[in-house]
Image (tube, rainbow, N blue to C red; front, side, top):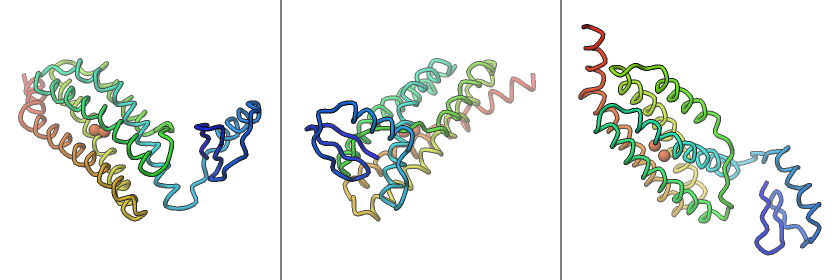
Length: 203
Ligand SMILES: [Fe+2]
Ligand SMILES: [Fe+2]
């Protein structure tokens, strides 16, 4: 369900409603929207639903990544988180371009999966001691990247299937960034973080 007011017209479930100055009516529709989330009837609905999910997920990450960067004990890992934070901000804007490409208002729905993954990252920050911190942060971040890779992989395929080639190209740029971020994290874990956590245990 989409409710927009660019020129005092409202679109509800794809139907253009008559112009109205009765805001009470509009607020009632908004309540209806909140109580009755959009039904997913076809691939287009699924695509929009997934776009809203990942839009919210990326915004959660814009808040979470600075905390992970701050908690990192190694400079290279901190820089990797900071660099991916900049990419993530750009990915939020890229998603807004995708929404525009497909004629939808940019809006998010709570991504419960990302809430859980971010919460697991917070547990590492609060519970891990220094030798294990970086390996734990990398694992938490890689879980996030894999979720994003799965989401963007589906979105690219669905955009192509629906004939949204420009949107598919934009989404594919982000997919490549997520894969590169995952590979970078993996190399940091293999080069240093896992071994340091293990050495400390052996002492
Ligand atoms: Fe992302
Ligand atoms: Fe990412």
